Image 1 (cartoon, rainbow, N blue to C red):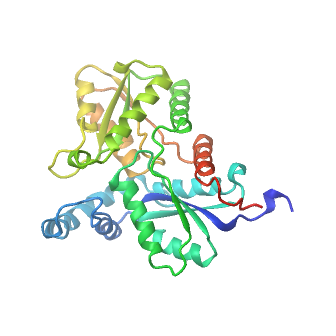
Image 2: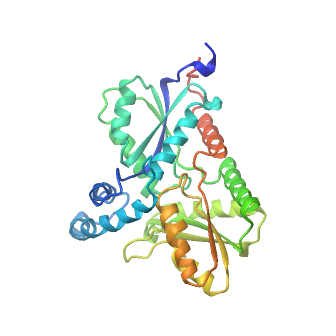
Length: 336
């Protein structure tokens, strides 16, 4: 039988981990998802006596309906874009010749397919070595560490624990920077070049960085490497942070405020890339491509283009395959 007809062995498995998504664009599904997500101490580190009344008395009463409307704007016939895109990436990696013989499966830190159920099935199926690869290029305790917490918690329930390796980040990986640059250049070739390229990263509270989270530094490193790769001047690129909630100070400058400032200062055409998101999701499609565009136009801008995430593109597959090859070196070849 040819290699192309052989089924990957479960012995070495790559676990692609993304944040998660509600099961449906409904208030009840969003409420379940948010309850799990916002109960994680990695995400919200307030004392429980302070946070619990806010979460259950205010947020889970008011936010699910509003968030469900946002999800409804982007939901596809196949389901949530985050889940659909993550599964598509896992599927392409699973048949990529560069990592032939390794099985690739997807799991979510919150929601389905849940990490505990996926790991339980992998161990039952004979997985002996697992590479946990969170799809977060820049490390943060709120995303990467939360995902790895879930992996190790799930393993505590197993009688036989497989060997585990983890990928902490890939914010400065040459393949990652090259894939982002190629994506921007392809977009410019097809749609023309805007006056300003805006790199919008997901935000976190500023005090998390003050406590030692390397996220902001890694975002800045990614941005600088990408600017150098594209060969553009510093004033042609801006770096902002999106998705802030609550009243405390998050990483600045804020994306929504910056879009308004650009328009008010005379910038008419902005193009936005979200390098921290491996695949498109609510935060890129609804928050940037839909709501961000509306905000920019309302402030006097004329055109906002969103440059899609890498998703399951050939460049993303190549990047992931190379990461996987490096991080599984020394493990027996599953195809042998």
